[in-house]
Image (cartoon, rainbow, N blue to C red):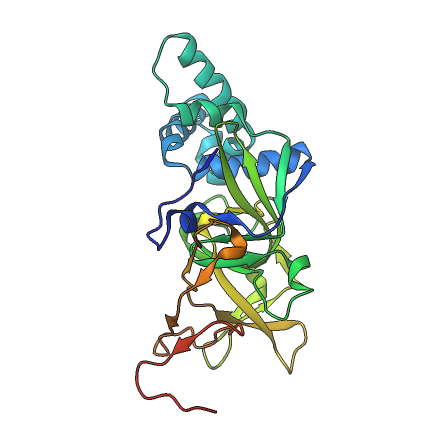
Length: 295
């Protein structure tokens, strides 16, 4: 089977599609969570976009008054798109239309039996679940995502605004959704609510993991994840400072196994805003603006 995801230029094709860092445990997951993950995959797959446009158009045509409320329209789309897509693709196939294989398998939906992992390598990062991080000296469960999202001021806000939003969270579980002809790795995350994110006087991003949100949208594609780490604020135990992890540029060894993964040297640009980095014992970094000092 092949994994699909957003294109990303990197050292090895397997660093884009991803590679598990642990043995799989197979679990039958509940329908609500599976549909949530499946819907996110559909919304973030290019070949499905024309169907999303069609579905939204039909909702507006059938509900001209209600669809003026952008929040209602998005909620109705989320609630009905999975079943609508399945029926729409089946109808087109029955009429003899040529539907690409990816769309046909996506429309059928993933298997309820999901492969779960405690670690996953993708986009030149190593990611762990929070439970695996507890037994490690390094932190690899922190993630961030910049997404174009609908922003509303309150439940009574009928005019949502779309814009770029940065989310910060931790990986709770790693799933590999099985669409029979291919798989799609996704991360289930605990996301900090927007009210739990702020900038301090020095420009650092501060997050409060006691204020979680986005419970109905906890999944992202593994290929979308950017790695961050969190340093507890010494003056406020409920708050953590966000640090940004540089690419670690993994490549696979000759036998192709995860245990044979090699790590390239990397250069950290200290002129960027991401001044805090996590340093593994075997991670080598250099500063380009001067000679190093041996300590």
